[in-house]
Amino acid sequence: MSWDSLPEVQGGLAEFMRERGVEARSYLAALERLAQGPATTQELIDASALSRHGVEQLLRAAGAQAPPGGAGAWSLPSEAEAQRQALLGRSSEGPAETAVLDETVLDETVLDEIKDAQRRAPKANRHLDHVSATAQTALARARWLAERFWLGGARILFVGDHDLTSLAVARLCPGAEIAVVDVDEALVEFLAAELSARGAKFRARHADLRHRFPADLEGWADLFVTDPPYTPEGVALFCARGAQGLRSLARGRGVLAYGYGEDQPALGLAVQKAILGLDCLVEELVPDFNRYHGAQAIGSASDWHVLRFAPSAAKKIERAAREAPKTIYSHGRQSVESGGAAPASRDLRKQDASALFRALLWEGGERVELLVDNNHPDLRDAKSQARLSDDVAGKWSLRFRKSVPDSASAVVEAVAVERPNPRSLVLHRPHGKLKNVLREARILADPGMIRPVLTKNQAREFVCDALGSVPEWGSELGECLVGDAPRAALRALLRALEHAEPQSREEGPA
Image (tube, rainbow, N blue to C red; front, top):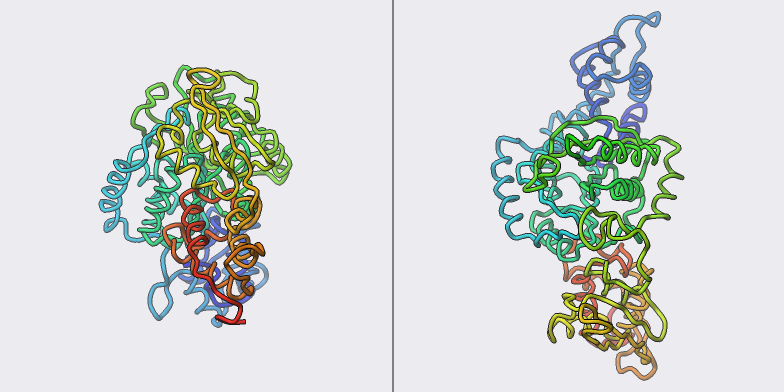
């Protein structure tokens, strides 16, 4: 059930519950008590664990009738009965869509699905601190989230999801919308395919959180979930990015997985200080909730934290995102121990492999040289090099110089393509919203091109058809920026643009 789908309720109750978002479960408990008959203020507090102030707010919003003389039991007016039953999922026409399906029916099936998905998922990347949680943990997380929060119609943001928790949430909470953002391009592509196969409403975005956060996910979510790199810098950055994604700092929540060894209290304290530095408090903690394949240094387990942000957190979050450290991981080339100084702007050797394509997408100018590892996946063989060249064709012409300046490195030389075309217009607009840039690219044409100029309506039809041809990337793909679009999705859309049938202004709607 989504609050947005409910009819208008007496006294603004629907709006009141909508504003509470994922917090609504406690208020629903109070309504459940009222549905059983008149109740005193104390009885409503006992039933919901709400404060007196919270109960009084609910009663006002519901148009409850005050007890005579200010004492006694509260009751709701009879005209509010249908709306109250709708909120409780007990309308006379049958139960409303529930946030969570019967766990006895789903749990074993979902567990098998997660185990299978984990076997097929991209391999863990040590340089990104990937240590997989067990399938049982992914399922337990989804079940716990559904029981702790009201997720009917909620928007849940996963800040990284190598553990595939989003897949379990999609199955147990079909009414929720899901967004996943991750630096691992292969993982983003895999999760998009899996979420699409499960019929979820989702967004899958690529982002290196040290540098940026997807624009279309800012202020989008009701709740974020993250299992970040286990360093103070990594925890603070992932929590700050998650908070950027919340549409209400006051009502939203974050859920964090983090653990440390029994002889490392100093590390745990440093992480807690980093969290508090965001003016964020730990509202709830479940010890040893998450279990992992490996991670023996922390006992193959971590704690589950519920985070809540103070009103003063906004400025702290903005600063943390703006001043994001470049070294946040505990292992590998990008670890805190690998050197505190940020690498040169075009030296990508310590970056994730996806940084090469992203640099070519975001960089402008007439010429760019990018230094990468000699065994970079996009340079490994002629086929890989051709794929990268094709992905940026229309904007750059690439030359690959292997074993330069040393045997461990390579240089990718990119020279701007002079002749403009619709494809180049898209690639030169990384800050533009994907659906808008595609439409403009379909409308505009160089005088020397064979393809005729189209009307806005014709171009809009093309964009709808093009986005509809890649349903595996979710219905909201067009809302993301070109620079945030998953590489495989952008490749498919550019291919559709290249192969679009020529059409004159006279064809189709004016």
